[in-house]
Structure formats: C-alpha cells, structure tokens
Image (cartoon, rainbow, N blue to C red):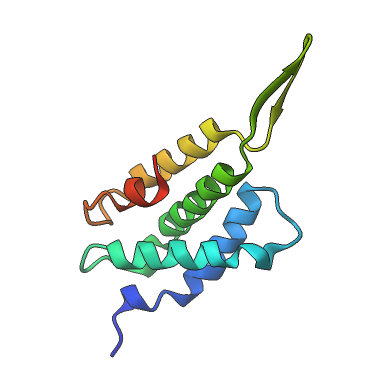
Length: 124
C-alpha cells in the first residue's frame, strides 16, 4: 500500500488552480504546471509522519499555491521605474508574495518537518 504523503496527486491540480487565482492567470495555465508539481513534491517530502492530507488539504493547497506564487513573483518582479515625476511599479509585488507565503507557512508549521525547506528552496 502506498504512503498517502507520496500519492497526493490531486494536490497538484488544486495547487495549480489556486496559484492561477493568486496570480490572476486565466490563460497558459498549463505553462505553470511544473511549479505545481514542484510544490506538491516538496510538501509531500516534508510532511510529518502521520499527517492526514485529507484533513489538512486546504492548508496544504494554500501553501503550495503560495510557494508557486512566490517563485512566479521572483521571475516577474521588475521593481519601480521613475521617469521625471511619473513612477510605475512593474511586475508582481514581492512584498505581497512574501507575506502570503509567510502566512501559509505559519498555518502549516505543525504539519511539516522543521527542515527549513521552504526558506532554502524558495529563497526567503
């Protein structure tokens, strides 16, 4: 019998859908499936023994989507550009992405091994 931590297949699609909601992506959803697979695998590898995925799925999906959104933000953030008196913030707001990830990580703290995996992998 397979361990439920290694078989959270449905989590990938749920994470992808939630990430697309966070990132306001309606098109090219499949182009980001690799990030959802990465987040699903990271979460699965770092769940504490005995954690029930069905009982905690909503929190785990939020965490996976936040992990994806933070990575997405890292590639889309261009900072602030100012020309004369006009300034424009470009790309995704990194502060919002970081705050979302921090909140979701906090909600899942008791579910994950204390390995620092999110901080090492995502780069907070």
